[in-house]
Image (tube, rainbow, N blue to C red; front, side, top):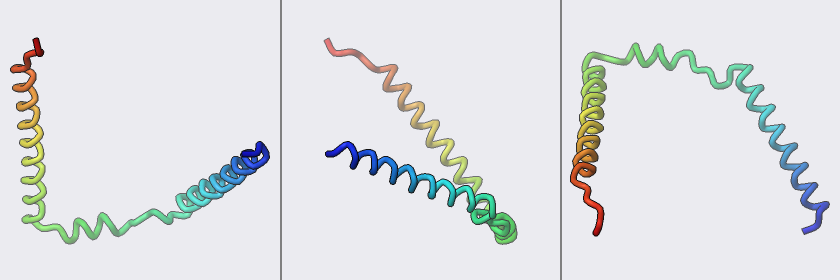
Length: 83
């Protein structure tokens, strides 16, 4: 490949990257990614049953992580290198 083509490709990709970065900064500054009603709607639509389900799911995740940790400890405890 010619050196001129490589230089041109680097210049074009840098230019397109700068346009993308400028678009991202503009979107963040103008509030395009803000969703003010998301949290209000979530609280408004939650009920006691949903909160209990979320709490039980969290407890099950913790129990599962603990179980995996115990299994790893057992494997390490019973590990014997090959002769």
